[in-house]
Image 1 (tube, rainbow, N blue to C red):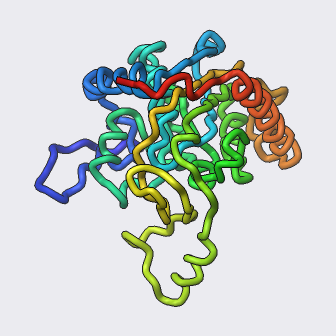
Image 2 (cartoon, one colour):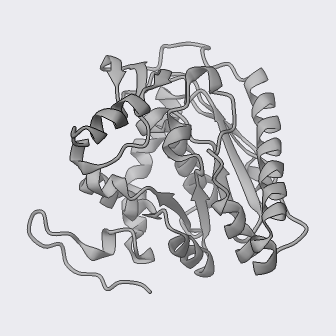
Length: 294
C-alpha cells in the first residue's frame, strides 16, 4: 500500500514519501537535473564504453547486476544514467536499496528515492513490477561490493536466490547487467568482519548502530589504507558496461518459485551466463587507455 505524501517539515523530521516504502517518491524532475552531472562523469571521468542495450526486450524486466566498487559503486550509477539516456523517463525502473542507507545518510537516501530507489524488500519489488515498471537488483549486496580484488571478475551473489523467486512469481525475464573497471577503482585486500564482530560481542558498539555485515581492508582515495566500509573517491579508470541477452526460464508461477531444486537450477543458469559474459568482457576491456580525464 502506498503511503501518503507530505510537505517537507522541519529539520530532522522525515518525509514518509521518501522512506523507500512507496513508489511515489520517484521524481522525473530530479532525474532531469542530475543528468548533466552524471553525463560529465560518464563521458570525461570514467569514459564509459557500453554495449548490449539492443538486448533489452520490451516490457518489464528484472535487471540483475554484479555489485562493484565499494560504497561508491560507480558502475551502478553509470548504469542508471545509461538507462535514462537510452530508455528515457517514460520507462520507469526502480532499484532495490539496502535499508541501512537511510540510517547512514538520510539526505543521500532521499535523493536516491527521487531517482527511483525503494527499500530492498520483496513487497516493494513486487509493487514496482505490478505497477508496470522494471526493477534493478544487486543480489550480492555488501559481500559482493566489497569482494576481494582478486575476485573482481567473478559473479558473486552470496548464495541469495530471492531474485530468482521474484522473477518466477512475477513472470518476468532476467536481464544481466555487468561491468569491468568499477571494482578496480579501489583495491580490496581482505575482510576482517569476524574479528570486529568479536569485539562488538564484547561490548564495542557499531557505528550508527548499524551492523556493516562486512569490514573490508582496502586501498583507496582519499584514505590510502582504509579499514571498514568507508566511501572512497573512485579512480578515473575507463569503465565498460554491458546489458546481456535476457534469460527466460521454462517454468514460471508460484509452484516454480516454491520448487527448491528448480530455483537452484535457475540460479546456477543465471550465474553461469553472467560469468560467461563477464569473462568475455574482461578479456577485451582496457581500463587504462589513458589517465588524462580532463
